[in-house]
Length: 349
Image (cartoon, rainbow, N blue to C red; front, side):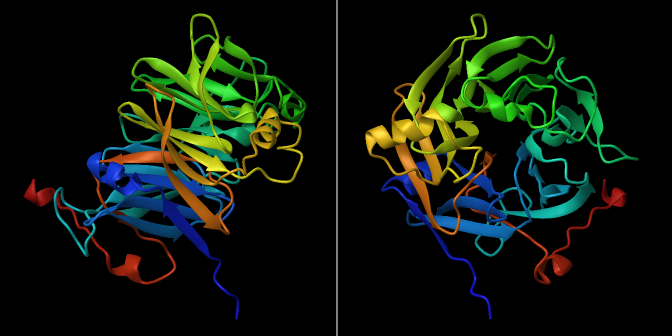
């Protein structure tokens, strides 16, 4: 009999209290362990941690009472089956995977939920932004100008997207390359942020940039290869770090004047070798962490930490679930999803 892989989530002293005070919960994914985590707060200042298993889950995109999540070869649409304010089993939201769209293994990274509820996403293996197709795996909607054709070769490692209600505004890639896996030669200082409207670089000379996001009228970014979180000044292209992060950073979302960032432990392979992050961790005598950190945007201080120990070593995406204190989700490994039914009728409208 195979033992179930073990992991522990350990919050810093005031993490649960901070989470409860914000009237929200947090979702995050680990493709390495194949888990979706939903973290909220219980009465009495304790964390509520709910997890479900999905193969190679990565990107998250949150909409109104829904979120989309990518897995190995599908995009899943989760809908909250609760009426607002209704508790069931101690939970105020139950997210049910109501639809799965088969994209094939296209390595979907960041996801943005559009005003009509459909996902716009980064198809990294095909070097493009894409959306759903009714007759194919996906529909390409944009690609960097230096990529000459739609092909299943991860050439530039297009990985991140900053979007708003008007759609995608900026994207990040690890290196400007038009050959398969060419981005690997640019990991240390070849990263770029591109303007989607013009295709032109907004910032260059970055080290493995990830998770560009727009918040409070500013463009934020994780410069993962150096372990820095900061702001890109759009007019000048200057990256201004506000703090150093003790891990390989991917996944970024915001709660007012706070950023919530995912941290991973670097792998022992060529993707992580030769990065300044490893040198800085060694200089500071720090062991890289896996988990979530909460950064104060005004001071750059890491005020809260949710550390993960055990089998989970790497995270990908992090998202805020607003107005939800204690969520859960249904999966496919028991009969629960078979009997959790929410009917709708046009006759009652």
